[in-house]
Length: 260
Image (cartoon, helix red, strand yellow):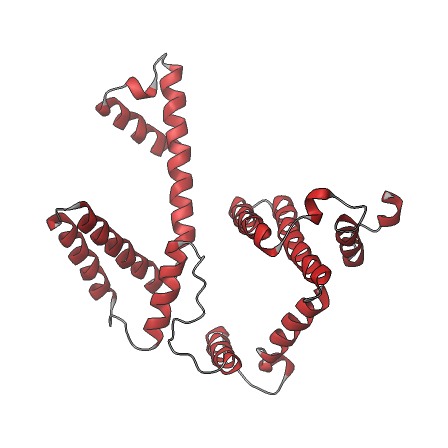
């Protein structure tokens, strides 16, 4: 009964609901889920939380973070049902990690600023995980391509594989564009296009920008402007796709002025 779960702000209530959903008299959909079947939902909910952050709407963000928490809780309940791990193992792991990697808070280590905190974090993380074959080990392959590129380039840069200044980074962008212009076959064009993307990611990384976030914002701008163009065409009794290119370009410039 719903009355059994009246403290909706309680983590214990959350766990009890999940246990009930996965229980003998629970929900058929929830009972059939596995770690593998839940993968796509974890990814989707994480991206929706990112969109909520970008929207600046705290109420929406709270809701989307709840959906992310649901995926954590469901996976923990699947683990408990299969006898492999429980939510306490999840909490024990993250709590121990937070204490261990913050010796400047929970120990006697002194740090000067946030940069030093990050440097210590990486050292402790490396010690925790043991000797690696490559500095690139551990980067999730499932990351979006731009985020993955930024992470592996950043790791390489920490070992000195880095242009000394931004001029060298921009020269590399121009070099890759030149190679793209000289390419002929489709496979070669694809290869060079990928190198252009990677070089541009390096520009953003050097500027301490989130390139994945920058790309999402660019997509949002394009969508806003394009929808504005379509609406403008309809207001004039036209179909956007039937307009000549020069008129479409005029609408694009109008949209840029109107939508930013």
